[in-house]
Length: 167
Image 1 (tube, rainbow, N blue to C red):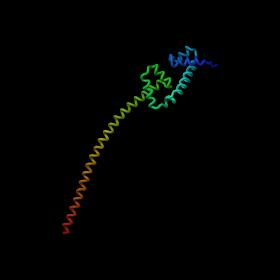
Image 2: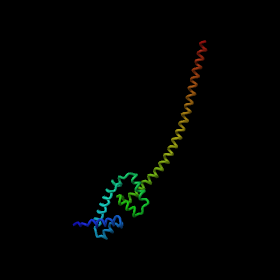
Image 3: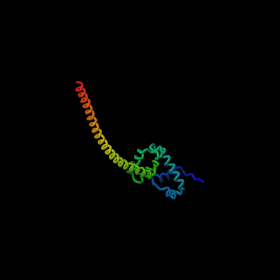
Image 4: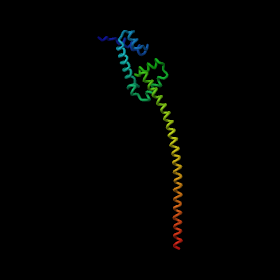
């Protein structure tokens, strides 16, 4: 047999659970003599309805962009524990998700720093190699120019000898 609760009482209990007293579901179930399964259902229904009505949370936190996740981390960083819990409830988040995102962003930043150092070392190595190759190319161009000059001189010398033999 299911019991129907008046809407006013239901709203008052949800307020106690989520806004006013921030009571846990088991505490509230004991105090109000309502099965905690019912309270969990009410809470989830309220949170789902609230998320659908909130503009920024039109989809689940799993689908949030990195920008939106970072925004949530920044918004909650200065909040007290209770305010942070309130924020999480209204946006359909778990506090663990926020912590996970924060860790992910920090690790990503550290990887970026490491990657930048690696990139700098690779760039330095490439510049050194480029410098060596330019030096070698310059040497070979000089040798080629010298060889071409010697060939031209040889042809002129051969041409002079032919003229002297003809005369």
